[in-house]
Length: 62
Image (cartoon, rainbow, N blue to C red; front, side, top):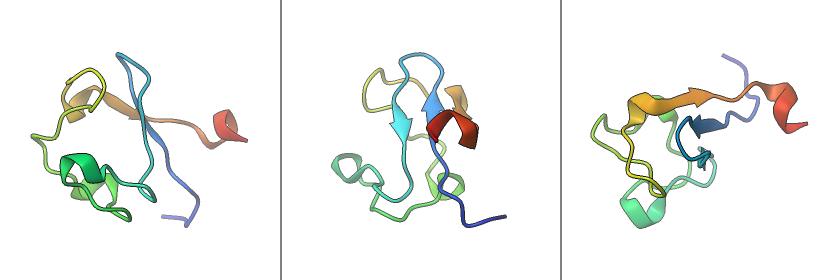
């Protein structure tokens, strides 16, 4: 896996999880990789499960 920045987006509301920022308000510290987030974590904006997120292609953020 490369060291490129990964952004994972909620397919329902568009919230973007950035591993560098984490989700501290919901117990996910900065630097937490997507695969290390518990499966019961929910989108902070729409409460959808982790399974409703997908990797955003790098080209979309350049």
